[in-house]
Amino acid sequence: MNIKIFVFYMLFYSLAISAESDYSIDRLDWEKRLNQNTSISVENLFGNINVKKAYDDFFVIHAVNQNHNSKKNKAQFLIEEENNHITIKVYFEDGKTIDKERSDVSIIMPQTLSLTIRMNGGDLIAKKINNPIDIVAESAKINLTTKSSFNVFSKSGDIFVKILENAQPESSNIQSYTSNITLEYLFKKPYFEITSGKTVVSNSSALLLSKHLSNRKVLFNNSDSEAQIKLKSDVGTIILIDKNVN
Image (cartoon, rainbow, N blue to C red; front, top):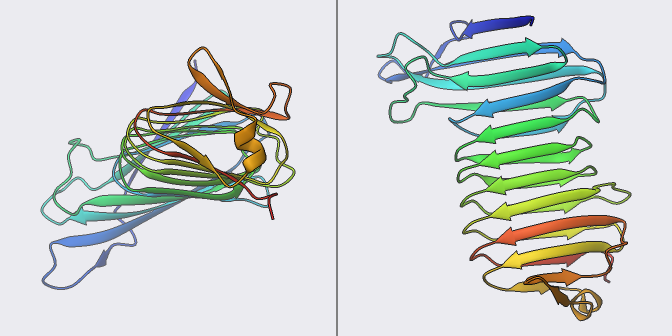
């Protein structure tokens, strides 16, 4: 097994916030040309993640880190490459952060490559991407706009997913234990399988009239629809917005 591990210490581009400040800013940039068989995993437990689509085959990641000056070990990137999979983790060597220490990550992702994200709190924003994506978060607020399939979970953060026109989401899932889920779609005839401890609302009367029950799940539209999407929120509201409705 051939594994390459690169550890980057955030010691360059260091900028003092002020002479009296207890914090400094460090920045890291890393990029690599990828083939179409490559998959990416990114873990950032210390801040926000922003994903944008690339217009070439270069994967680019930027990290901006706020480190406490009393610590010798700054935030770091651990990058592992194994076969056609790249794993990138943001971490502090002692596994702890002080007060306002954080790391915010921006990703520029070649289209169609699969992406997996793991994070705690903060915000995740991914706009107009065309990548199969899996997101697992503790309490992050998630805003995803996509043309591809997705699996999204945030234990206690609100989730907004917009499926673009001419999308091919295939089988996809959205789940939250305690928060609200909003799904906006531009393609026709989605099939929804919903489990919710609260309510399901929609701007589409045709969608609501198609409601039927099976095995304690609420189903909308027919199972032979173009895309099948499962949504689950134990106590949150699920909102379905049909952009085809005038």
